[in-house]
Image (tube, helix red, strand yellow):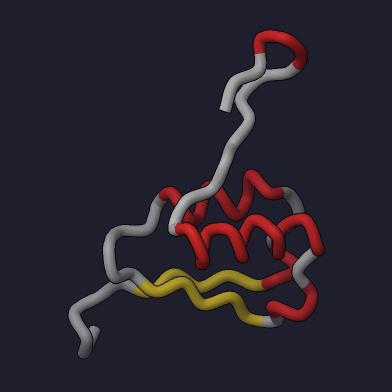
Length: 71
């Protein structure tokens, strides 16, 4: 807490679905730090969501299935 921010810690293998990452990201506040231990073991689809979050500061989430699905 020396910097006055919170830190969230998780592990790469813990992130099995993109929803797991989105849940963690949506719980972060401005200037919070997310540390992912063993990030090299993170599945590729989750890495893609993480790259989007780091580059654009947002993620696209699809809610529902079929014609009624929305982002």
